[in-house]
Image (cartoon, rainbow, N blue to C red; front, top):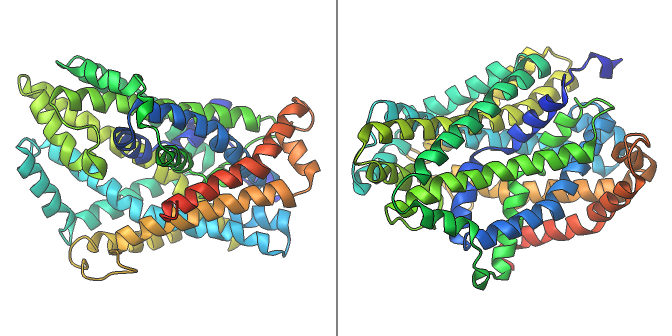
Length: 453
């Protein structure tokens, strides 16, 4: 009865766009380009695509199996398969991880909103020193960054509170195509700049001399984080899948769409950067310090075009961030709604309130509370490191071991083959990767992030 009362995605395209939207975020449009720039361009991309198939798709299928089998929020889904064994902790770990991520992620998403407003007001037109100082002044302000962060969580709340089909699916069908259109417009504009083809070559002509074991591990880590493995997001969304949904096919489509958007983001950024002589390895400061100056210089001959490009770029970032925060919010909303037997709206408010508190503290840690350190880092940095280096790899590792070795093979076979309607060979391949390849890959990511290897 409970499963029938739960929301469901209404279409295959809704499933792909919503789940891809959960993966597509700042990791694709911000982290992927600067990781590509720091690790040799096209060679990194090729390794990244291999890693998506080695780790990403099997890892996604493992979480899908738990979600559709459990037909509930992440905590109850694991409990229904694990009973009172320690394995049930994985679901609670995923819920906690997603709420921490939503809290600090909203701070960076709020910065994107501020930069969108600043672009509209023409406040980002200046030299590199001005733009750098602008970011430092804004991010350390005790008021406005916190307001934008809480406001971003509020926007997320409005979508999630409307439910799976009327809120999440409808928003995904609007946001994802819009995101792609904006991205394509920006790519065309960037590729028309003088010297832009050098950026295109950097992106698509591999230099295998730059490949090291570190590059491989960085690509593995990017594939891991880009696809939202270990957050319980994929598990939660899969609980809304129908019996007809092909788990392996959906995972493949989502991974390919996610990778395509990441590569398109590089095709947008590198031609513009090369056209003004900016190094492609600008690092995490790329979107808030480096790129505003790139837009200003690259379109100096046509200021109106540069103005429009800057607005579209930060609108793109805000939209990408929103598709991710929606999925993070939904994990906690489903948990509180179903576990505490309260309305969906009240469950959403619990998540909004808790994550807003985290967001405010993380925002203040960049200024007023900068002296407060947790294990040597400010609160924003600590939350980022805790989730990225520990909680996400741990959650994904435990899920693969749980699905590969604990859940009865009959359950895994039924889910992967859609109750015998697809090839059994796919089941054997998926089980092998989930049992052996994914745990080894995740262990390598974990050790690399911990600076052990």
